[in-house]
Length: 229
Length: 219
Image (cartoon, rainbow over all chains, first blue to last red; front, side, top):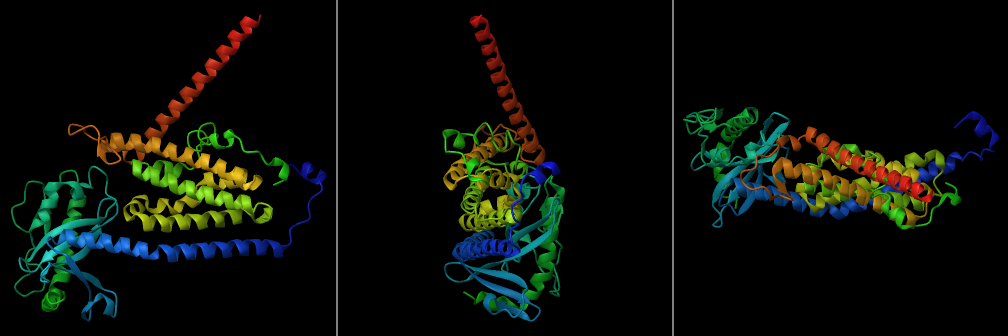
């Protein structure tokens, strides 16, 4: 747009500021109305989707469970999720058809190779062991790091992984560690994955940290959890 | 924005986006989602449809309001309109499938920055009737989706050995993991562009050869 060209053509009168503000205001108003109505419309569906995804994950890590009850563990103690006075560690108690406690599901996370890995694991107080693990969120490299989800041999580690507390009940008796592939000797060791060392180590570290800090705090509440269904 | 620039609807209004002005293979617009989320057919299809929805709704609204939006604030208005429909599609995908929502991640929100949509709003919708704009945007959207599917199918086939999640090559196939990673996106896009350039050059050669022959016969 050269200056000679614009000066030779008669310029239209500039639009009044009132009209500019008005137009933008109306468009923003329409936009706001549309976004809010869609938000209100989709909200129940989104919540239902998330609830179903979480429930499927809880039932996957606690085999045999058919119903669940949510609790929150805060500094003051264990509360049902709806009555929790402050945010804290969520504890999903899972029950079988007869209403007896099959185990609890806890979330854990640690930094993997690409980003933070988030998992949900199941813990059975009767055998004091981890009975299942599923990855909730991962950005690990396809074909390498994502074997923590897809490698059946690695996933089998979590069918009965020892997580006993020490005699004083202050922490795990043996820290959960990931060892080199094929070198698992103890029930608290995780048989690692060659080619996905960092991701597999992250799983061991997060389970160990989470079990070590959360399980001792749950000791006084097992009766509450058992009667929850 | 004068009325005399408005074009009538022809078959070309629709077809132009599919081939001659294909947003991906010809205009090279919106490369960010093209490279980022085409690691599987389902992701490519979801992103293609989401973008088509945003393109269609926002250009239709821009065309409807074209005489009322002062040109000083047109870009701001277009961005607000586009962002609105992106938010809508974001909620809709979240409600339809949590799995697809997580697979597409931030790239749904990033549709707002897809220059193809702002480009169509500015270059076409602001100068044409709603009906013409809808037909043109539908063609562009389908052209964009087809391009994403072209990349997604090749990357999933080579990178995972599956198509739509169904194994194709059997047990013995070792997947080319790199095809699922970012470099694979560039490789496959490059291969497709090469193919299209080659086809176009051949067509052009054929045309000039025909013209030359016709010239000889005329003599």
